[in-house]
Image (cartoon, rainbow, N blue to C red; front, top):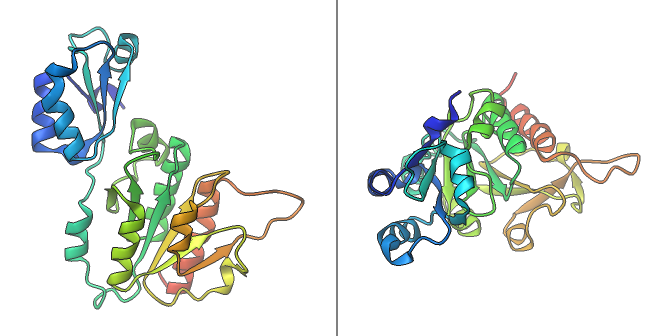
Length: 251
């Protein structure tokens, strides 16, 4: 896969991309020492669409796009089309799909883990994956490669506030299940007999405290031999297939 196709460089091309398809832009890279006054429109468009902006040395831009006239501006573009969360909410019909199942990822920053989770989500029959825009790996070339091309088979949505998104999901009937090693119940002890949104946290930190407080219930994976936790993608795989089996999605 030619990763150069996943970058757009130059002020005018990036400006047009931000106007026409801002949902496809994962991050904007700006060469250090550029005059901020000349970039006000780009900054405003990024702020309006909650797109992270990072200042980097010129050599970093060269690593991305090679020796081209990048004008100090490079946009990382997703190889898949993110779906708008509000549009997805408008189209989902819980009455026709009484047992939907989606994943919410809470700051999974490792591209390999993220890619593996996307592959598992598609394979296990999940209906969608929701990720935050900040402190979360976007769908980069590395993520797409790790997913073995399955990224985009089911809707992927990027949201600004994961906790607010959880509240909206609750409003339309979803129950929020958090994977937490301090939970009382084991993951196979639940029947998952409702629309389920499964929250997977990052390695080490797990689900953030505020997000955990929004969960309706939590489950844990039993650990033996003093093993503290599993890789996030392995944990997600166990839960995804357990939920799918209980719902009759995978047989």
